Length: 143
Image 1 (cartoon, rainbow, N blue to C red):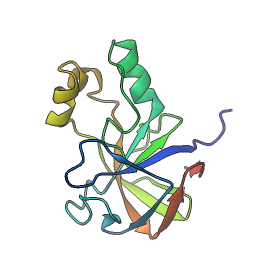
Image 2: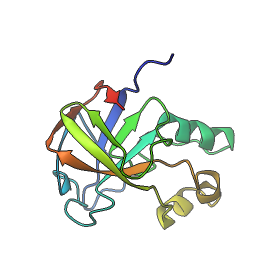
Image 3: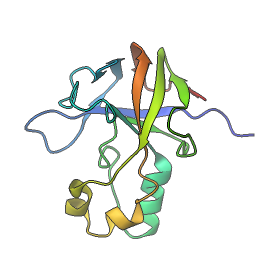
Image 4: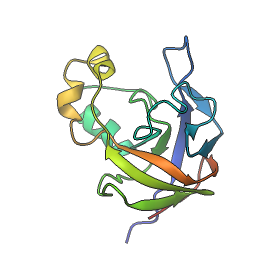
């Protein structure tokens, strides 16, 4: 049996920055990730969780990416795309609920025109916090 997924990296989006900004911890509430430029913008797209599997899939198709390039807030070391809308899970202190599968955005086409097709079902999940708290690198994802 595989170990519980673990948080490898944390990111936020900041105005006037092209790349995601690495963080050691994220503070989340029902409006999303504090300090993120998308905080309180879209209730179904508050926190993006991506796994290293998405990066491996892109790489196997010839697209090399740095972590954070897919727009994630939370990068985990195992694929959690099997979670369904409404499923709840815990990372660190935070209870999250899956709100939707990650839709593809035009930003991926800018990175590489093949990327939207490569990752159409495998980019990650959007979630919202149902219990506020802190997520840190190395926290376990308890499903």
